[in-house]
Image (tube, rainbow, N blue to C red):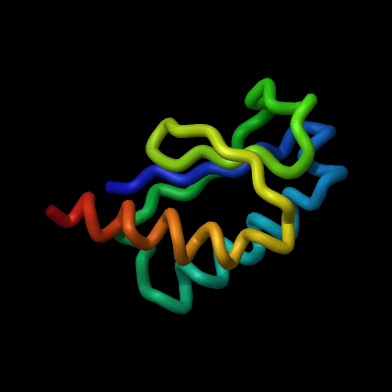
Length: 86
């Protein structure tokens, strides 16, 4: 199972974490991936000094702008899901 999380700490919240979460939830629903992605919100991931919202995909931290959430999902999350299928 692919693990995906979004930081909801104060800094990430101000940088658009809610929009990232909303986008990811919509895409997971749209593609029927509930049983393949463990999606969660996490408190501070210590990425506050970086611009953007902190996300973690299978333990690898990234920082994305809220408007890049759809692109990140298609370019990073979907390939991770396919790889996890084996």
